[in-house]
Image 1 (spheres, rainbow, N blue to C red):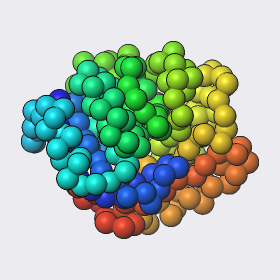
Image 2 (image 1 turned 90 degrees about the horizontal axis):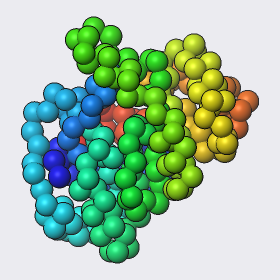
Image 3 (image 1 turned 180 degrees about the horizontal axis):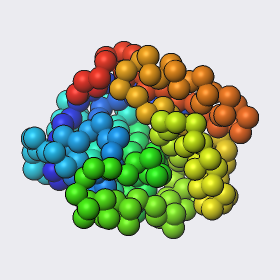
Image 4 (image 1 turned 135 degrees about the horizontal axis):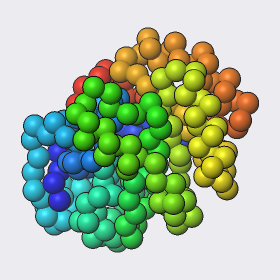
Amino acid sequence: MRIAEIFRSKQGEGFWTGTDSLFIRVSGCPLHCGFCDTAYASWKIDRAEELSCDQILTRVLAEETEHVVITGGEPMVQTGIVELTHRLSELGRTITIETAGIAALPVKCDLMSISPKRSNSTPLGAPEEVIRRHETLRDQKQIVRRLIADYPYQLKFVVDHPDDLDDIDGYLTALGSVDSSRVCVMPMAVDTPSMAEKLVWIRPYCRARGFYYTSRMQLVWFGNRRGT
């Protein structure tokens, strides 16, 4: 598998916020989202290691953490993730996979953290072929339905403007059969002041619908930097 970095930190987003975790960040993602905060692991790849499953597990065992988060990039386009998750499960690890919901593989997973990419993710200003590929791939409701049927899940939406909230409502109506308590809404932010500004309109929206508001607590704890 192509790995951008492996590091220990605390989960900053979603249901398991604050959980001590080992993060395995894979390299490569076909979406190139405009708001991506890990371009270095997605398409502007500045370093990546080709590691076998055994090599990754050696690093996991050295850290002795129960929770392992496989993130990216896009983990679900790497076939090696199947063997990795099965072996992590055999070792008794609790596994989160963070995915855009554009592919499905027979992985082992305790929490499938699905972040469907909405219209605010379009990489405006990118080459036409990049935008076309993004728009073709980003909305895969049939795959998202399969993932939420097969795994414990959270649906995590990234929002930048109040207009994004109508987009979420429309998406969930089209998706159907979603437990509102499994829906997370997170501000698009790279600093704590902008997070606080968006909280003003995100929190009432979540409260009215029974959704879960999630901050990006890694910004509070560590700032906007890699390895966190």
